[in-house]
Image 1: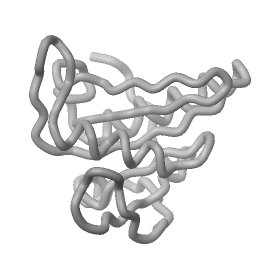
Image 2: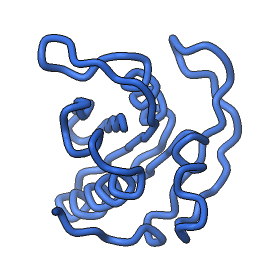
Image 3: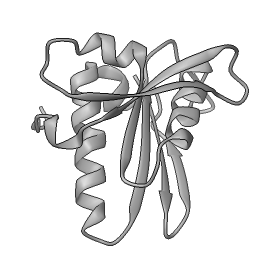
Length: 132
């Protein structure tokens, strides 16, 4: 699972590497993690935009790399402040979970071929999970 976030006030961008918990856990845990970060960091007056996509990742020089990481970062860039966007792939993986999504249409992701269906996650609908 690749997860990317972009923060405003101050500006910061980060990509979770494939060796992190986001890569080793199912989509539900990645959604819970991103949702918790958005909620918790908001208390500090910082707005976050997050994006999730799943796919093949590589580790190059200790950092996450590959098209899935790139797509996750582009999905995060499409989200607004305090929003979590996901690809249709992630949405499909959690079908039946009760998590609510709002369709945000197709987007062209810079550097990624084709049009991508993106969905905003209703943060309040994401169940909290505890770390193992």
